Amino acid sequence: MVVEDIGSDPLWANLRDAAAVANVSACWSHPIVSTSGEVLGAMALYHRAPRGPREDQMRALEIASRMVALAIERDQLDAQVRQAAKMEALGVLAGGIAHDFNNLLAVVRGNTELAIDLLPSESRARPLLVNIVTARENAGDLCNQMLAYAGRGAQASETIECNALV
Image (cartoon, rainbow, N blue to C red; front, top):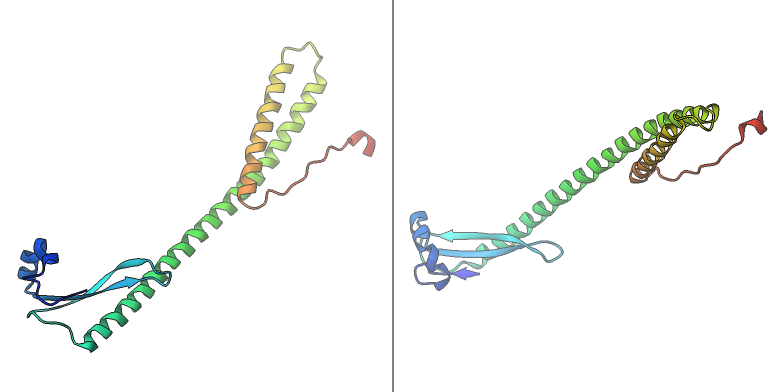
């Protein structure tokens, strides 16, 4: 975009006062375009007197806008890499916590099931222990979701009859 005389160009009608304060009378701009074609902004050169740009000035503006586009894209990619690293670290943390918590839940489950087996069937404590087993299963499902989020969700459960092994 080339505006040779800001004072008479309709595009600058709302900004003429600002241009006067800045003591500029001509503006030559070039879009900053990403490698994918997205417009990221614009770069402009100004001149104090009304006039058009020289060919070398427009070439320099075009080159500068390409360089700025590359710098912006690199900054955006760096931000994406930092975000990916944060998400990876969060996944590793979640996986570690879920794994450790799952180990604790296994102890709760084992001891609760043993307590249920040791109690007589008419015991008033039995339904309370069954509630603990149910809550443990729900907590285990949550741990499995966290492990899946962390990329460590592939696991297999197998029931083993210990008496037969012994």
